Length: 239
Image 1 (cartoon, rainbow, N blue to C red):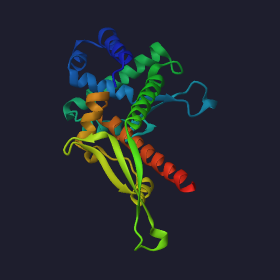
Image 2: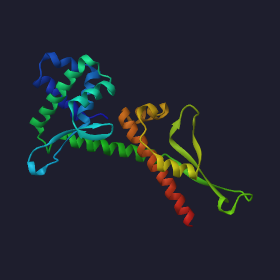
Image 3: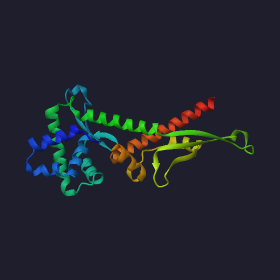
Image 4: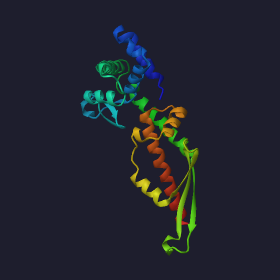
């Protein structure tokens, strides 16, 4: 997600803090994107208030914040952001320089790292809500007198998804209620390699999300959608 504040910070560091040796990392779109990603996935946290102004740097590894670790961040750059080995140490050095500059100019409590994360979360929540508003569902009751009494009502759900399968062109799928309940119980965050192309294209082209944001939005979207369907089913069943 675009963040003009991070751009300003990077420009300051390039022009006022580091020398010409480092400028290619700020001027090359790929490396600038990597630096922005690192900053946008970082935050400060005061885990020990008794220690006063001691704030620790946390990084978002695999969708969860943990204390930033140089070795883990090295692997993250290599495995997730596809940075070449020859550049990783320089990127890590610049990352620390940028963090120090933010602390020096913004302080800890008032720095924009946490605010940037909050804004990102708010934006992703709005994307999920938008997708949910574009999705519809209704129940179909199939009655079959040949079945046992307890199975007379076979509830099927017709869902019109906001994320349209571009391979078939069909936004509609049908599920039995058992499938909905089981999916709700089993739902896990899908990793990048398991995200459908049409989902990725939709979230990138319309909402400008990156691959990690795809995972979070897709997980929350389907989780809330199936929750909504199940809650509606329970309300219908009570009547």
